[in-house]
Length: 246
Image (cartoon, rainbow, N blue to C red; front, side, top):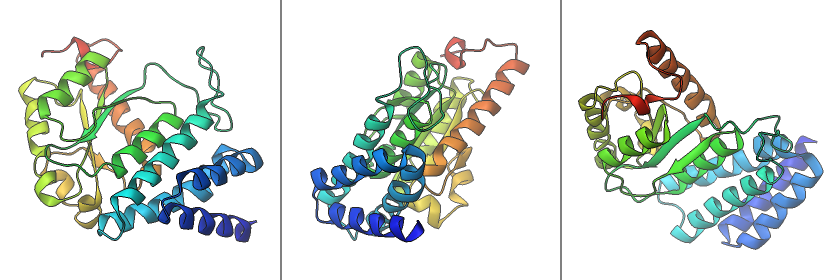
């Protein structure tokens, strides 16, 4: 079975590098029907996207290839979630429940325009049942916090590829503290620079990071639980930091 998945990974990887989204998408769709969402995410799509992301972080692939990779991931997640009903039914093949209370705000740090990692994280969060507010590229610190307060999110995720952009995340931390939301609003950080320099997470004020997009849901779950505990100890409600000082 593993040799079969290896062959599928190689075929999908080749189609993405050739910037052929329809062919890559067809491979993923076929495998979803044959093996189900969990197997495809863990043994095909996840490893391929991780390899693409690694090459992207070292400027070894083109913008077109990065776009195709993100598109394939998003299309696959949409296909998986097509079976999720509005009443919170299990997402087909995942065993996950779409939870309207799980809200995450994500975006690229100020002056950062490398969106592949962010889009991959958004895709895996959605399949894990998260409602994702994706603010896109070059997001100002106040916009992150405003969106979290508006949506009742307990976690903000900020992506940065380069060191200079990662340093802008400090301003997000400062904005959280300025609004007296420390502890109740957690800051997840990610991007190639944090893989190469793990100590940078604490330096920019992050509460945690994940090495891959596949690991992001577990990180967000942990941070959201920690934020909920802080809020409960402070006597806050159960719907996120939206009722806090702004």
